[in-house]
Length: 305
Length: 290
Image (cartoon, rainbow over all chains, first blue to last red; front, side, top):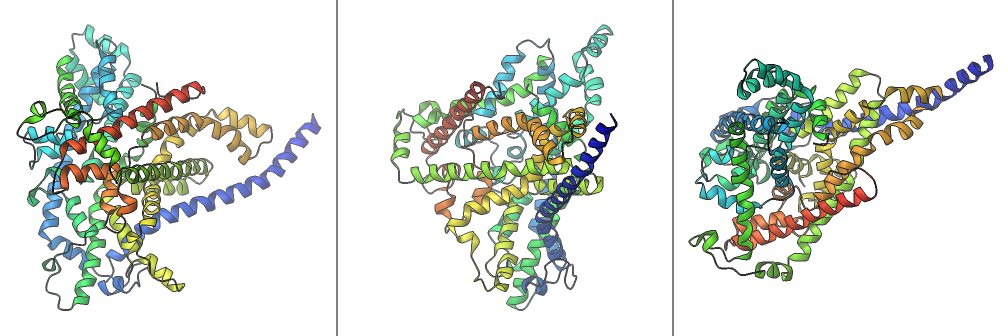
């Protein structure tokens, strides 16, 4: 007995050596991943706060050089960018509200065992994830509905994601006990009131996660805007970003009254970095608040429905 | 209850099933004045034209190589990250790594591609500045067809590694702690515990994800490819989806029917793949989707 414990103790001590090596390797590996992901982000933020000369001459590599706010001033002076921001705010908020309502309306009935035909409906929904009509037929439907070049084209075609319906349905099925429904029905509560007063208040975390997923989708949406919108006054921020960042279409009047070509060139680069920061910050501010619910949301969705 | 359900059902019918039936125009010569029903049937003419076209093999090759490359490159990293994080005792370090690695998922594709353009710019980009220190001549990364797919795939991994690891972290958290306790009692070290407890523990979920992704192999992240494209890299970057978009909505001679036929071909292959992969997985006795 005594020998046994001794043996075990020795083995723990011996193993702790290899465990220590494991821990060191592990921390080094994670630190490398951390730096690889973080560095581009830091670089962009630092560049956006530097002077245009420092950016152009490649002096920025970690922290801002000759701190200045010229890039941000140029961003907020630009009318297209400001309009794009306003449009994106409208699309994101209105679109997300529509999404969350539609998702609950689809998911709740399908979570109820007494909803006749729910398996058929589920199949009907899930099939659309595996097979779709494709880009052109969808475009023709939107066109026939006269949604082209209206705000509706940004809100209605993306009103529902079947994946999120599955996540929410699974959440309802696993967290809302049947007894609660039976008790409410005995008290004469109808389905709509039950959904509104009991189910939704119990589903805060999942609603938060799903609202965030939808909001990210709207905020970052550019493709639908590109094919459905013609009027630049309706353009969301991402389309304007695409013109400036990818196609390098920075109009001279965006850059103010700079005299030399070099100064204009410098401000053009600075403007890009500041624009990247400004357009990404709103989501990056919101997501840490919802982050603690992610695991729940992702895990619930992975349970076979 | 049916009243609640009416709106979502209507949405699915109008925006998913109507286009599905609208794709019959792949077998017709669609003209706007005659509408979908009035246009004349042409059978498989559009499909035959596509199979015989000069672009066909190139599109198929690009589509498959980009998605297989993405599949292979993006599979192991989230698992490694999750396994590593699982053994981190220092909560603050763990939280920091999670917070930072999730962040790129929330950045838009336009911004990610914009970042690529900034970093890889032949004159001002930091990558070429650093290469310059070692005497390497500036490389026009975005204009090199041979580099397109690697740039696409590795920036995809950068953006998604953190978010993809969440599901594995959740699976690891679900492993019975008594297994680890027993292993420690038996003198297993951390590496052995990882191999014999953690990896088998997350295997089912990894296989489900692999099935899902293999079924999606015809789907390329075409919104991202589209903004990364330029005439110089088109040889490696044109995929079925971007081609459909161009034929159907951009080109001088718009051809709705031809574009729809190409899209339908892709959707059909994808659907068959998903079913085949799932059946195979079932037969081998592993996890399956249904």
